[in-house]
Amino acid sequence: MVLQIERLPHENSKSDEALYATFRPGVLDPCQTERQTAYMTDAQTLIPTWVEGALTPYDKLQAHLQGLRHKAVSVFVMQGDKTLIQQRALEKYHTPGLWANTCCTHPIWEESPQDCAVRRLEQELGIQGLHPEFRDQVEYRAPVGGEMIEHEVVDIFVAQAPFDLSVTPNPAEVMNYDWITLSDLAQRIEAQPEAFTPWLKIYLSEHASRIFT
Image 1 (spheres, rainbow, N blue to C red):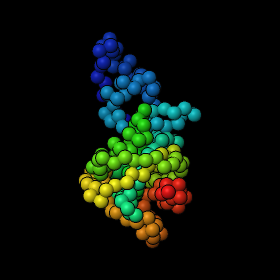
Image 2: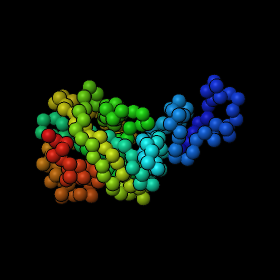
Image 3: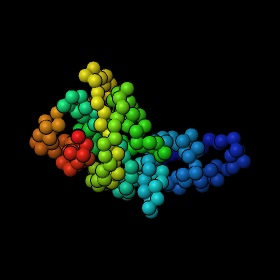
Image 4: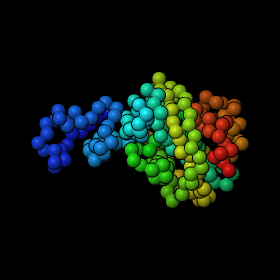
């Protein structure tokens, strides 16, 4: 995680060392929200993570390398009896090339789950105009390769889509997508489980009745 130090007006008297000293590796003081938003090279690497029992803005990669419990958002877009699944881009930092539900992501610090769901549908798949509805909150822990662990407390949303929904994948996020019924998806996972992300398999095997009702 790289910090670009550019002074706010009230910080002109501070040295670079003093500014850097306000940050600790992985963790930012919640009171530094103004600076973290303006001057992080990628503010979205800071996700809500439980550190020593307190919810804290924490570096996303470090949260996964350390297996820390953190907040997440997952969305299933439905079109009749079919759901939209995506194949993760090969550039993704974990589980590249695997199939997942429509959108699975992390809210940035102080972002609501609903806003996160809407934002990432557009950023990942170019989907606009849907209204994701909260269905449930689940927690799981699973290895995702590269010595990383997903330990997520996930707010799950379902969004109903019209049959003329426009889907325009962002190639940095998504390499392919498909519309598939839940029964066919279950059969595909049974036939080739290694092609699917751990969280999608967990959602369908343990929480389907709570999500698709």
